[in-house]
Length: 238
Image (tube, rainbow, N blue to C red; front, side, top):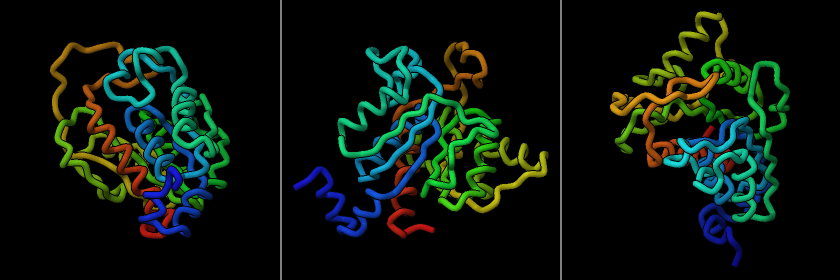
């Protein structure tokens, strides 16, 4: 018996070996990315790099895996790394407390899968351009805020995403700049957009407006991204 007995039962020994040898990089470890990271490690991914500049904030506790009342103020990537290694001490987990920006060198060509779970429109657009030009697979999360219905979460190619304000804003920006993704890539999205009803809060410097968000939606987004990555590594999704 091993912690991956049930994984191997489904994927076979060859599939488990492929998961264990795969190199994945994940940008963003908040509402979507934290759950994605956990699912990847529990699925047998052996090499995971997690990137996020932020520390845990009180407002994160309702939906983000690294966030508890005990971890407030700590770097998200460090909290998450500790948890992931408690799940699989043999995994290689690199935690980078850094922000993805245009021109930053994360050596993306060396990864089998690149996953985008960041919020910044500018950084997201730049990551889309760089990651889509890399040989590895690329998967991206669109906006997970202002949603309640879990049955409305979908997967589609970037230019087929509909009803998502973030997806529309990204396509508009890329077209305006005359820069398009080098290859098609899949996105997790949701057409539901509910109004914010509670009092507006200060999102902090450099942050977008703070929208209402629930854990079951961000979790589904993150788990779906992890599922796309696992399918790709196993050769079941191109």
